[in-house]
Amino acid sequence: MELLYLVYRHYRWPFIAITLLSMGSALLGIGVIAFINSYLIESVGDPVSVIFQLIGLILALMVVTLSSQLALTTLGHHFVYHLRGKLLKQLLDTDVAQVKRIGQGPLLASLSSDIGSITIAFVRLPELIQGTILTLGSAIYLGWLSPGMLLWTALWVGATMVIGWLLVKRVYSHLGLMRAAEDRLYQDYQAMIEGNKELALNRDRARDLYQQQYQPNALDYRHHIIRADTFHLSAVNWSNIMMLGAIGLAFFLANGLGWANTNVAATYALTLLFLRTPLLQAIGALPTLLAAQVAFNKLRALALADHEPEFAARSASPTDGLVQWQILSLRQVVFHHDGQGDRAGFSVGPIDLEVRRGEQLFVIGGNGSGKSTLAMLLTGLYRPVSGEILLDGEPVTDREAYLGLFSAIFTDYHLFDRLLGPDGQAPDPERVQQWLHLLQMESKLVLDGARITNIQLSQGQRKRVALLLAVAEQRDIMLFDEWAADQDPEFRRIFYRELLPRLNAMGKTVIAISHDDHYFPLADRLLEMRHGQLSELTGAERDRVSLDVVGRLAEPQES
View 1 (spheres, rainbow, N blue to C red):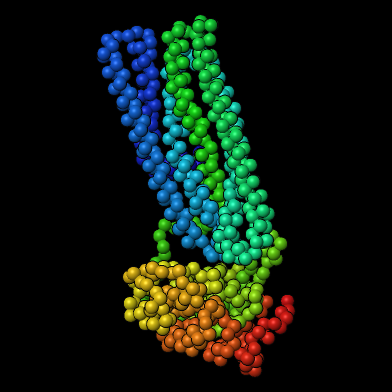
View 2 (spheres, rainbow, N blue to C red):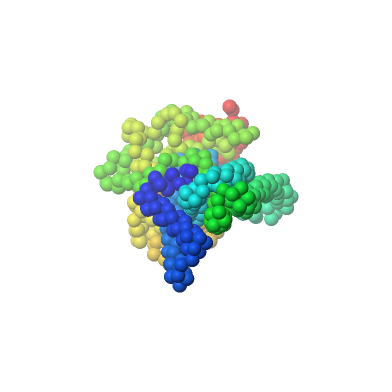
């Protein structure tokens, strides 16, 4: 199994040691049976001596068995810890475009359900290993007592296990379908949680989401989990009853056919009774291990970035070439959005653009014009399918360093609760206090060192906190995607007439997606995205747009 192989590959020597400990547990278990056979079934020696020896063997068996199971379970939890960390690091290293294609639902399901399935599998794994080793060891001992009886008993038990396995295979198929339904359920949960305000206003939409999306997915999940449980319980009960039948077969072969004496038959019965619980536990553990395999398959299907244990270091030296850049250029850059379902794909480009250090650029464009995609390309979050990004005429080869030039506040930004300075160090306290005052957040924001303790603010205030976080990072280029849209008119004026000039005075290059035409004259250049193409508005055209951007956006976009 892949689970065992991965554990062996990452923890070879501890795994080998635990396997040997499990084998020792199995040998002790067989030793207890052999001791009972020799001293309590075939003959009885000194009763006091025998009982103390038996108690000693049982105590040793308990200690070794418990030790092997705890060791394997602990090793499993270490593996799951590293697997979870690896998955999160891969997620952090994956291109934004790929994360967007995967979607939040499958990612959340993998981080919770899939990792949970693998954790449960490790808890049940000792049962499978213990049952397997005990069965093999007991078979050797029973073969030594009576090879003929072992053959027929093995055929009986083998047939039992084969049919049990066929039932478990059906469990596997339903677990895969159940897991797909679970992905859809997570998307439904996400829609209900994130859209709770809209759903409260529109009960028709709430009913449609509940009845037409959630309930079919929940019913599909219920169907497959019931089928999986049905086949699982069938496998367990089949194995349970057939193991009792194996005991009857042993006595029939011994007493009915005369293949062995009653003592050997009693030993067979004792051994089969001893194996009954481990075998049933092993069969019971199989669905969890199969669910773990389904989880592994799901994790692979995410197609995240290859795992890199460490974060790439970024140079912040003043002499670094990127820090001293003067012109950022996009040359014939093209990006494609793949179509999904009935939605057609969309292309942006080819785009040619030069951004000079210290400039203040405004970008306008209608919905779906490609301006947000342009922002993602500029910041390096989207990789162009063709064309190149250059700094001072040289192609960008160090993507990590290039990303380190930008701080950005997108429309779908996430507000973190911790201030970070350059290179992840503590922020400059003086700069933080200065901008708290400029953002009019001194009396509203509570700081515990670098941590913000109250981010449950209004949307406009949250945007100001996001700007504070961006300023604290001290990056060269600051990108704002409709930042002022959530601000009141007074603070919108402060943003354009006081904060942006201050950022320019600090040497920052500002790129702002904005439709506040009243402030367009403040920009060094005015750019427009239209149907995936970028152009610069100058002269009379710029003046006209600065008076009425709505009229400009209302003009038809020609394909």
